[in-house]
Image 1 (spheres, rainbow, N blue to C red):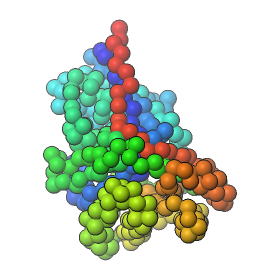
Image 2 (tube, rainbow, N blue to C red):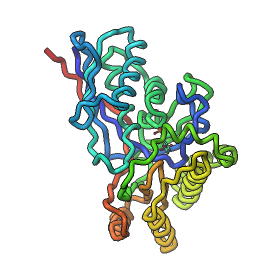
Image 3 (tube, rainbow, N blue to C red):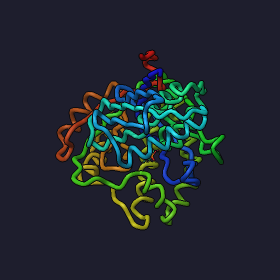
Image 4 (cartoon, rainbow, N blue to C red):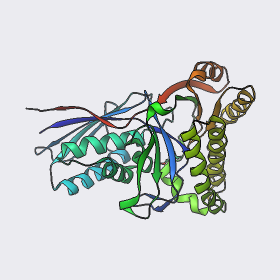
Length: 328
Ligand code: PMV
C-alpha cells in the first residue's frame, strides 16, 4: 500500500486555548490565535497494510504501546471511518526537536498524522476538514494545519470549530526564542488541565476577556504592531496561569527560572528590545520577538541561571506532504 509522509510545525499560542466546552470533540471554551514554529517539526509517515493485525506506532524510533499509542489508534479509527477502510496502519513519527524538553509535540504530531493518514487512506480533504479532524486528536493541532499566523474559531460544534490563516509566515518576521527550564518532574499534561479549567473562579473572567484579546491580537498582527502584541500576549498568558493556579486541584507550572526569564524580558523591553513572554502548560518560556533581535535575546537567555538550553524558531508555514512513494 501507498506510504505517505507529512510534515507539520508546532505552534505557540498568543491567545491561549484553555478549557473545553466539549472534551470529546475538543470544542474549546474560547477561540485562540497562534504562530507556527518554523524550523521545528514532526515528520510522520503512514502506511495502511492489510496484513497488519493491529496499528503500530514508532515515536522517535521507539515502538509505543502506552497512552500515546491509544491516542494515535483512536485518531486512525476516525480516519478509517471517514475513508470507509479497515486496514491497520504503521505510523512512524519523528520530531526534530529534543524530547524531554517540555516542547509540546502533540500539535505537530497530530497535524502531520492527520494529513499523512488521510491521504494514505485515499481521502482528499481540504484545509478546513483537515483542521477539524486534527482538532479531535489534539485541540491545538488544528492550528498547525494552516500556515503562518493562525486563528482557531471556537465554534459551537464539530463543523464550525477549525483554524484558518490570518496572515502567511512572510507577513511579519517574528521569532520565538524558547528558554528551556530544567524539568525535574513531568508536569500535568494539558488534557487533564483543560478538564480543571471550569473549577477556577477566574475562568469566567478570563473567558469574558477573550473576544477583546482576540481582536487586539488580530489588529497587532495586521498592523505589525509589536507593542500591542506584547501587551495582549503577556496579559493572556498570565490570565491562563491565574486560572491554572486557582483550579481545584491547583497547578503551578512556573518554576523560579520561569519568573527570572519573565522579569528579564520586561527589563529588556524597557531597554527598547522588542520581546515579550508567553508560557504554556509547563515551565518553559517562549520569548516572542522581532527576528532581528533574536540573536541578542538568545545570548541573554543562556546567561540566566536555570535556563538549560534555548531553541529558536521562525514563523512556520502550513502542514505539507513530503512525498508519496509507492511500495512493493
Ligand atoms: O492542544 P492541547 O490540549 O495540548 O492544549 C494546548 C494548551 C496550551 O498550549 C496551554 C495553550 C494553547 O492554546 O496552545
